[in-house]
Image 1 (tube, helix red, strand yellow):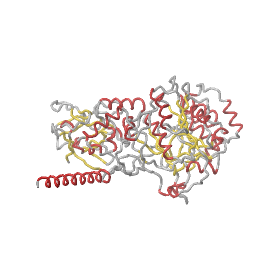
Image 2 (spheres, helix red, strand yellow):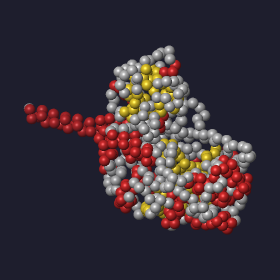
Image 3 (cartoon, helix red, strand yellow):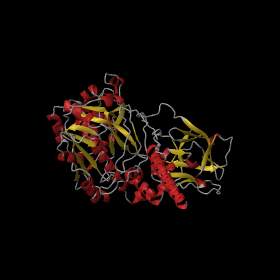
Image 4 (cartoon, one colour):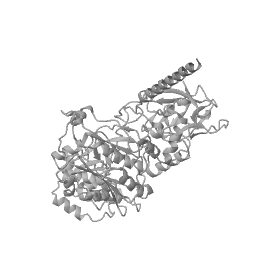
Length: 604
């Protein structure tokens, strides 16, 4: 009798184990929550599902995906069970600081690259991005016999993970029969991991069509691209920056117009990858222009160009290009004079080639059905080798070669440059004569009639921001932010209208409107409806401060309500009171640990 009972008991345990195993399998594979990028503060923002699936792939060896991780990524993985899945609900929390190593990676990343390298490393080399094309683009068809493309990516001291994600996105989202090669041009980078480690990864983990060219000295973007083009053998040259991610079906829409007309130069729509969160969001359809200071700017597209039979899918004629991303017939690139090799490093080359394309018989178009994401940094993280103003040098060369009498518009704004040396331009002047290029007046009359010529005493009007919000973001919560341990409320140290002033905790005053915060759908915290709570980009040890709301997320993007904490997206840390018993009430950012000093509540 006892043996029979024991046998049935064992059968019951086995049945129960199998049942729980099946239930857990179903739960983890079919009940994962998806999230939306509703907090991306840009016009044209697309809501797209996302699931937290970190890919840790840094390293030269090709391993199974779950084994791709380096030391820093391993430390991150060790914390995930302790932090629990709920604390990683938001994509932006991928930048959370867990330890001093994370802090060093984040701070060094902003210093060296001007974006969040910690998040980039955790994303790995592959990720899905939202398809930001117009729905009609998905109905477009393209010829089967499109020309082949050589992708040229010039880089200098680029973040390893960002560079590899650029390359992998091209490999993953480009038809193999059209992708002739990817040429990486290293412009004499200093970083160690861009030496042997990069070569090893390319050799062991990427197809042979990925090639690496090393410059023996710093040449700059302009000459670096010319070097890359000299190694290319594909029909079409496609130039990309080293911090991009191409989108779905991006290549065919660029190649088709060039196949129809070899003198057509095309650019994709440049989507936005936020420098602080690396969230990918759609950009509005705009076209390139410039001002008389010879700075590129974005212009709205005239309604007449969007109201044709092709609607949002029609190619848009653009007076200028941004310069980082474009495609061009390789033979035509050489015939048209490539780039001006007398220009240095960076700056002005995009306007020079734009003027040259239009004035010498070509045309420049933006292709709405081709989308490429680009990390828009708030500053250039590196300068010129000898500290020279290459923008001024290059602008002088293009003004003297291409702008005829209209160069006086430039000198009216920069009179100090009239006597500055700009090198020998005889070769470029001869190129213009040989190509029988039209006058700059023709360009203004026929390509960019919107450009107004300034009178002798006129000043150029400041450009209005294109993506300025047309309506206020929806308010999610408002009230006082009370610290649960001390019972005090977050207030301005001095006055809520003082730009740059820090915030502290003070005794809550129900009659004081200057303690009222607004928390909106852009994840901004706005005090007294005046200024936004902000964190310094490179100094996360600084106290939070009040700054003008810029609407670009990152340093002003906060997440409330998870375990009563206030999480700062750019800093990757949580808000806490330094010393609850101190009358000064100082507030700082710290590693999120769930402690009582990091718990807050908005009270209406």
